[in-house]
Length: 354
Ligand SMILES: O=C(O)CCC(=O)C(=O)O
Ligand SMILES: [Fe+2]
Image (cartoon, rainbow, N blue to C red; front, side, top):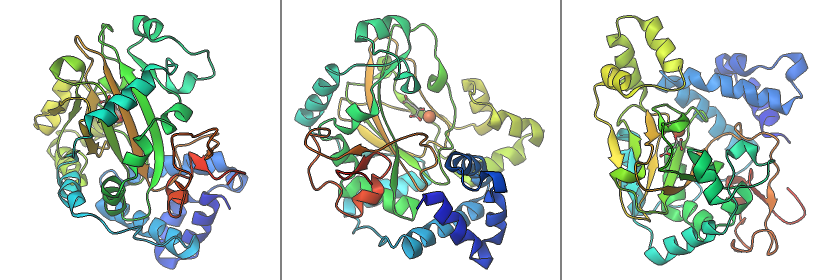
């Protein structure tokens, strides 16, 4: 059954979820349209921006659905001690560094990407691939395709190891789903910051966060990730809104896609943090807080990202890749042992289909 249909029915069956059911109720015409249902949830997610109560209520509903209807045991597994401090920081501050990844592993991952084709944008992969030189001469970024990212040696194993998946399970409060995978170069030759190189916030799901790994050394010259601590929290946003002279103007500003450094400083008065470190540096960040990836000055940056969320709403027209020695030679054959089949369901299915 479609995830959304099942969720809709579950929410409607619970009296205490009535206000939420009204928010996500599809019109009769949309009821059987998976894309329309996805859109409804994408539009509803911003209701949690200023209200931790709204977010907690939605998460309770999702967790109930996953546990009681889909029958997936939760919590997924025991959380190792090394996950506890990063988890606390992710909640409080919005980001946390994680233990470095061994240099030989990072080298294998970088070497792998060196041989893969790149694309102008994640959504333009139907066009022919570019060489790195072509991309570097023309664009700010160059993206790898999802099938190649899935197959990057070590990447998905690291992203779902006990520390990272433990953080995900606790932070999300339900069984995590991998909702985005990405890997891209940011080029130093570009002359102007574009798109995610300007401050913004992501609203990818009702609750979500992202895991990043630098595969090249990242110093001030190489376009570090920049994060404004605390801006992922509803209480920070409520205070900033209250302090604003004109709440309507504030709402409009929050609704604009890209934000200037000066405006971010004026509104929050919080110093942004630049995350630097050698290749292998990795961290989690709640990117519903204000963030950007700086335009590199003199060195290119290669980064991978895995995002964990609670609904499959971001993925459109997306078919999972079959886990097999032919299509995914770098993933272990038992990678989809439950609950990993649920965690990875958007990207991977067992041979023969879901
Ligand atoms: O390039 C970066 O460091 C940030 C990219 C970004 O905005 C994101 O992954 O959500
Ligand atoms: Fe972002």
